[in-house]
Length: 291
Ligand SMILES: Nc1ncnc2c1ncn2[C@@H]1O[C@H](COP(=O)(O)OP(=O)(O)OP(=O)(O)O)[C@@H](O)[C@H]1O
Image 1 (cartoon, rainbow, N blue to C red):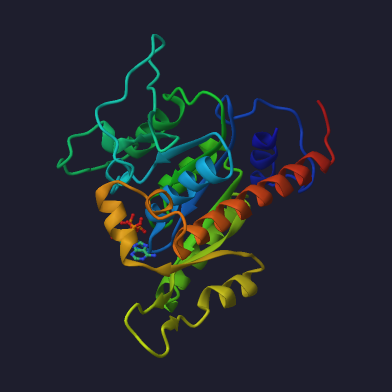
Image 2 (image 1 turned 90 degrees about the vertical axis):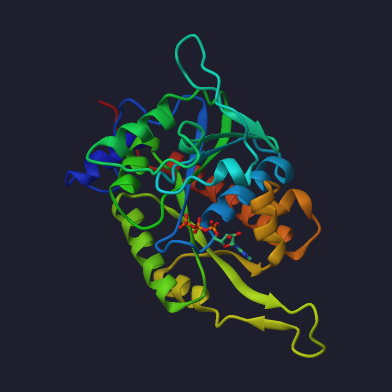
């Protein structure tokens, strides 16, 4: 339904009216959401992984994780995925399950150390294979770890998956926030609702300091969110255990569920669930025109 609404509005149609068409969402997948960042290295994949694990293990959702970061697919290491995906009779790949999450990554299909060189339409066809060529079964939420930046791959994923929303990850620094704004504007242009902004490494709790044991950032994401009319979906502290967990293939939500960091990820997951519920209600209450 929303597929045609979006194409319609993109072609200059009138906002607020939809009409009946083929739904482009993946069969069996209720919501696909992007975890994106304007700038690279801000913790997008770490957020995607811990969000997916929190949604599955703390919110009782059926969850998939698609590593669409074609330039640096790290999910296989972060989720300790081993082997190649099996293929069904109708040639669909079966995701590999880890920590209760069904995972698929381009990193599972290529040699570990091979350079990933994408030319022309190759990114688009790889993403097609990673989305429609996978037997996801029934999922409440498919979390998509996007490539960093804003580009062709983002538009392709937004359109192919009919994203229900996008979560933007940034660090508190101005340079990261400037790129985050670009990301937010790009998703707005393709009519993907912003679920919120996650400020990663937002503060540091010094374990050995007697005084001033908390060092806070300057609340840059709060300012950016307020200026752009979006919500702060969470603030994740800087925590050494996160890096170790990623390298060892054990997301911190699993290894230290009672830590402040894990609680922060669970709060992000709960906000995502309630925001998706709100958006579904809004979509159902929109006026519809049938052809
Ligand atoms: N809150 C945090 N505290 C400490 N380290 C973190 C935190 N979040 C992420 N990291 C570490 O920062 C590094 C970059 O994180 P990550 O790979 O998730 O970023 P990314 O935005 O996905 O990067 P890329 O742009 O390359 O895809 C990793 O080593 C990760 O373990």
